[in-house]
Length: 217
Length: 262
Image 1 (tube, rainbow over the protein chains, first blue to last red):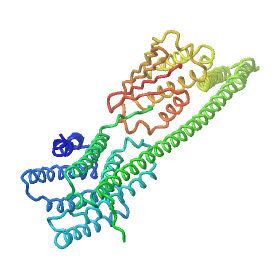
Image 2 (cartoon, rainbow over the protein chains, first blue to last red):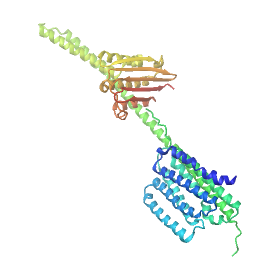
Image 3 (cartoon, each protein chain N blue to C red):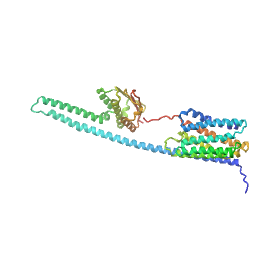
Image 4 (cartoon, chains in turn green, yellow):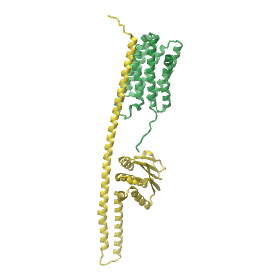
C-alpha cells in the first residue's frame, strides 16, 4: 500500500492542479503560467525518475538536473511576483545557483550522491522568497480577502513543502543509507507534504476562475 | 570527547515535524491577522461611505428646502406682485381711450399673463405642491401631462403598484420624483426620442420603476459621465435604492430602479 502511495498517488496528484490550471489557462497571469509549466516539468521528470527507479537504474544525476530547473522556475515565479529589486537580483541568483550546481555535480557531490548542499541552499533561498512575498502581500491594500488571491495559496504550498522537507534535504545522504522502514517513513512524510502542496496549488489555480461582477447601479 | 548516541533519523523526523508545525502556525496566524485587518479596513470604508451618504443627504435636503423657499417666494411674492400689476393696468382708465391705448392694454396683459404662467411653472418645478399633497404618482402624472401637451414627447405612464406609492415617505417620493424628472429632461434634451414609458410595479416590499425611451441611446462607457446621471445616482444612493441601466447606441434607454421599503 505504501508503495502505491509513494509511487503513484502522491506524484500522480500533480494532475489535480495541472488540470485546473489548463482549464483556467486564459485567466492565469504570467507568473501562474510559469507555475503551470513548472508542474508540467515536474510531471515529466517524476515519470522519468520513476521509470529509471523501477528498472534499478541510478537516477541521482536527474535529481541534480531537476534542482537547477526547479530553482529557475520557482525563482522566475517569485521574480514576477516580488518585482522591484527582485527583478535584478533573482536572475543573478539563478545564474550563480546553476554554476554552483555544476560545480557540486562535477567536483563535490557526484552522480552517486544526492545533491544535499545545493538542495538545502535552494530550500533556504526559496523559503526566503516566500517570506518576502508574505511581507509584500501583508502591505498590499487590495481589499480582496486573502483566500481569493491565487498567489497566496501557491506561496503557502511552496513554503510548507520546502520548510517541511528542509531537514530531509539536508540529511538526504544519511537517510538513504537507513533501513527500509526509515526510508518509507521519510518518503511517506515528503510525499504527504508534496500532496499537500499540490492541493494548495490546485486551490490557487481555481481562484483564477471568473469572479462575479457586483454592481450597485 | 564523549560519543553521542542520538539517532539522526529520529532527530530529522522531529526537526521536520517541528519546522512544519512552526510554519503552519505562522501561516495560520498570518492569515488570521490579514483577515482581521481586511475586516477592519472594510468597516472603516463602510463608516466613511455612511458618513458621505449622510453628508449627501444633508446637501440634498437643504437643496430641496431652498428650492421650496424660492418656489414659495416666487409664487407668493412675485406672483402676487404681477397679479397686482395686472389689476392696476386693468383699472387704469385714461381720458382718451383710443386704439393706441387698447393695443397697449392688450399687449401689457398678454405679457403679464405669460409672466404669471412662467412664474407658476418655475415655482411648480422648483417645488411641486402636488407631490406634498397628492403623492408621487400624481406629481409625475402632472409632469407627464404638461410634457404630453407640449407634444415634444409622448409619455405612457402606468401604475401597477397598487397603493404602494402612498406608503412612500416625502423625502423618498421627492428623490424618486427628481430622478424621473431628470430622466424626462435627459430624454427631451439629448435622446431625440418620440416616446417614453414609465411604469410602477410592486414586488412584495419592493417598488420597481421602469423608465424607457425610444431615443438614440448611448454606449455604456458614456453613461456615467453626464451630470444628470450623477445626480440620479446621488439621489438613489441617499434613499438606498439600486438601479440598472440598459442602453446601446440606437437602442434607446432603459433604467430599472428598485426601492425596498424594508
